[in-house]
Amino acid sequence: MDWGLILSILGGALAVGLAGIGSAIGVGLAGAAANGVLTEDPDKFGTMLLLVALPGTQGIYGFLTGFLVAIKVGLLTGKIPVISFSQGLSIFFACVPIMLAGWISAIHQGKVCAAGIAVAAKKPEATMKAMIYGVMVETYAVLGLLASIILLTGIKL
Amino acid sequence: MELREDTRYTYAVARIRALETRSLNLEKIQRIVDAGDASTAWRETAGWHLLPKGELSPENTQTDLEKFLIEEIRCTNNLFSSLSNDPELTNLFFLKYDFHNLKILLKISPESLDGMVNLGLVPIEKLKESVIERNFRELPKLLQESIREILELVKIDTNLLYGRLDMVDIILDKKMFDLIFRTLKRHPAPSCSFLNMLFQTEVDICNLNICRRFKRLRRNRDFLNEALLPGGKLALKFLLEKYENNEYAPLNEFINFQIATFKLQLNNLYESTIYTAFGLEPLVAFLKKREKDAKMIRMIILAKLQGLAPKAIWGEINTINE
Image 1 (cartoon, chains in turn orange, purple):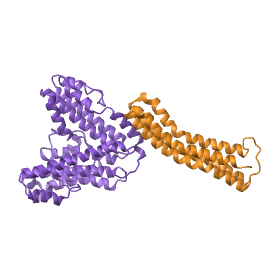
Image 2 (spheres, rainbow over the protein chains, first blue to last red):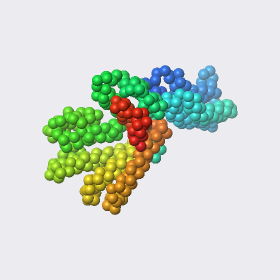
Image 3 (cartoon, helix red, strand yellow):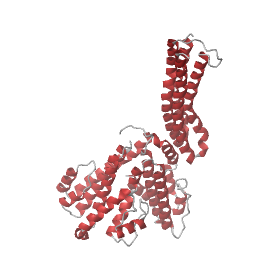
């Protein structure tokens, strides 16, 4: 196994891992808040669900990037091309946008959603407004994913 | 206010926000005040209760009311404690009951339990036993040392105390706030700055009330100096000068204005907690709101029992809100 392949796999693995960690923390925060509301008002489950699920998307973006890397280096077909050190490094750096944006944005989105859940508990009519703030954080995870996809597509093996 | 997030309180704050929808608002208060009689007024409080709402019996309305409201406050306190990740901080809010009970034990009689409130950290029977037997090993650590010191002070000053019973109040209040500020100083929780502001304002209100009482009783400046509590925002030197240089009427006017200002500050402090998404602050504001609501319900229903007109009741409500 050469360094090019190792760096590529490391990039994909960290994209999945870090974005996944961020999502787990984010969903954890929003889930704890939702449970607090459900203790007093179980009928609000539906309203809370979307706000709890929102920080989970970064984990999916990270996984998608990891999957694209696996296709790129031929891990799924078993036809692994020769990957030079610089190509491997390029793939690693192509994963960095979603790695970092996914990780950090998921935690902050979790906080925004948890605060939004508290808003929805007190003023149900403001639920959509609270959700919009959560979605605004999502923008940066989507931009990270797009950057990673564009960069990965641009790398020729 | 320092902006730091305490995400340990995510669950607690969300639950409190859900519970806040049950608090009394102007519309609900209006309905209770407009109710025809005490039992209808009590029925109008439905939804406010954390416990299943009991019915007031026509023969023992006042006793039942007191019993139900005490149980509600106990339930709120238990919820507050259970949601807290910093029991050392939440216990500070129950100290007032223990110190109130101690005042009664030391001033009136260690044998009687009349006037004592069983909402503190220590059950009143246990507190009574500890004071009589001078054995504090079973009390919470937070209280052990303080009670021992208080009893020493009271023992030393016994002769003094016979003539000035309010000295017991002063010693105990000083000890309580000293305990509170020492706990806040060493605790690392981000909510400590909020709690500091809260207790500082309470100290200021206490000091202003002491000034008023002492002026009425024509006590001298030295005694006041001994009695004033440290830790507030108002400089003690300033208070002493005001006390010395003014007669009762202008001093009372100054105190009324200052107390109204501090109460407004307290209200603003509680209202500011709506902007805290993670922290102990919303829990504290909820606890205080429940205490205020209970006081208001009690006042309205007692007023109904005495046949007061809604207009007169509103006047009383305004004094609670001030």
